[in-house]
Image (cartoon, rainbow, N blue to C red):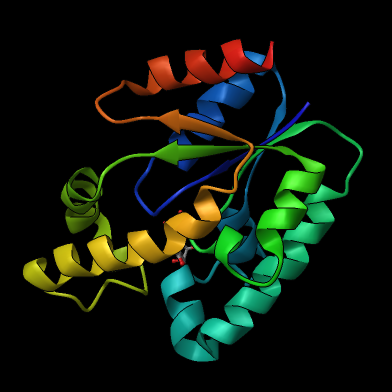
Length: 171
Ligand code: S3P
């Protein structure tokens, strides 16, 4: 079984992915963490600053193809933008069972306001700008997220319950 978690920044992909991989006894990959590793442990924020978003998207696409095509089973968490560039959402759906962790803009805003400094797309935004940005950005990105094979409404649910829901749907 190959499972990929997709969704907006702050939707819980990494935490849920780790828990899910433990529960299913599968390898866990986090695409952002692999990109950081590839870049000699320099942060995603610095990667964007030094080499630009286009470089990041190219590396992201290339690494994604390598992971998706491997034979072993896994749980994979990708970045919030991964499904929205090149033909990544189609690749994700072709090679894995994609789950969209779906929640509302206000929940994402509350989480991302506390964590925005590590994220290049939002680190420079004020509180008010951040909320408006998330509403607009999420509505554009939803077009890609909604193409996932499965959708999990994560609003108000604990990480444990989300994991259980995914386990139930794959077993
Ligand atoms: C991005 C999301 C980030 C990371 C990068 C770009 C995006 O991952 O890949 O900062 O375009 O939404 P998370 O979704 O894990 O924050």
